[in-house]
Length: 172
Image (cartoon, rainbow, N blue to C red):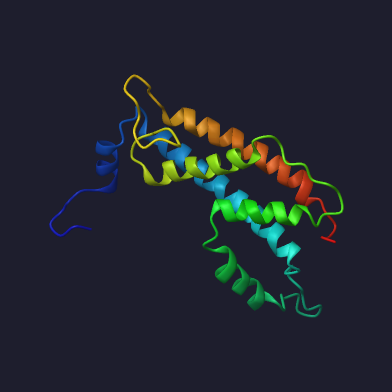
């Protein structure tokens, strides 16, 4: 907080976000972030399984015995992994599956775009095109439009990952 500044978050938000309904925008932001976290969690689970880092439990106490290794893997390997590296690793792991995985047309672009839209919601006060810094005059982009695009991309990607990666027994 800036010394001497006396404003509440709501006032700042209301004065900076030029959207008809602030509550709607916050709800879309929340969903975009939650959807992206859910996608990341599924990807982490796929990676953990492929590297043999599924939780192993002690029979008597039902507590994980390898939690330290799992946490190290997440912290040092996955925490700062960007979308491009995640996609590259997913494609590499697809080669190890017992069945052939054919990625849908434009999957790379859709995957990248989902994360770009998430970043727009998380870091921008005004909606903008995912690949452009400024909105061209006369080309209004609304939060609702990019929210709907994120939602569509999320559903497509999650369906693909569940179908091809999540239902596997084990990597070969």
